[in-house]
Length: 303
Image 1 (cartoon, rainbow, N blue to C red):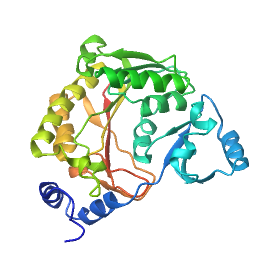
Image 2 (cartoon, rainbow, N blue to C red):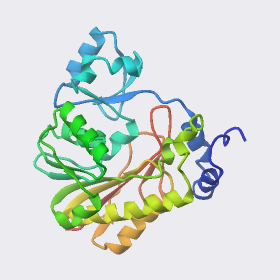
Image 3 (cartoon, rainbow, N blue to C red):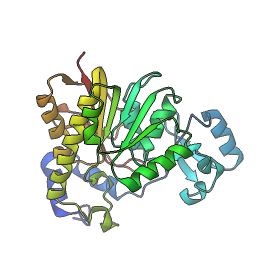
């Protein structure tokens, strides 16, 4: 009973219905205090430069084996780290390890035209820029005005002024840029179950099955838009920070039925805290002290 305590009852029942093998790992992972994780910004500093300078300043870090740009902060604490030149100069970006996964699956390379459909506050947009050395035609879309200006501020700090930003509904981009992009990221707004914290009821204050259905409706529009904006042969990565199948596997099943030109792309994740999605559609990332709960899937538009 202690494991379930603090979580919405309907949420736990849903996990037991769809993911009975992983309920205890999901709930125990959500209860763990999160460590601070971050990545370097290759546009402003190299890995060797950062490691050398951090060591000289007494900053203690741990490597992330599957992503050389990423680190776990050991000391000082996050607030003190945010007061360093590294942070102020945009040489690093604080980001959950789960959030770093989608851009790594996009098969990015220089010269591509890339669309980040739901981009604020800019964690994945700036990561795409860093991974490609800025050598891509990158378009970032955000609908909500305050979030849009937060995105603009983060892009500026990270040296990503070359990114084209659009204050608009991402659901309209498919018509505006029909088959205009080689790569599309749909990191969709969601019910945020992967961030539930039983010690902070505000983290699930607005959650309900009605909220899940509401988010699924928004996600469907965004996914359709992303698919329409994708060129034949292009890759689309879809991700959420939630567990609900309506927002994940069922969403992708629906899209594959509606758009026969889309196909699943198989991939593996380079860490162990994962499990396959329903019917093998995508992967769920189990929450830990370094990861949020997450879902990610990769699609290709047939050439």
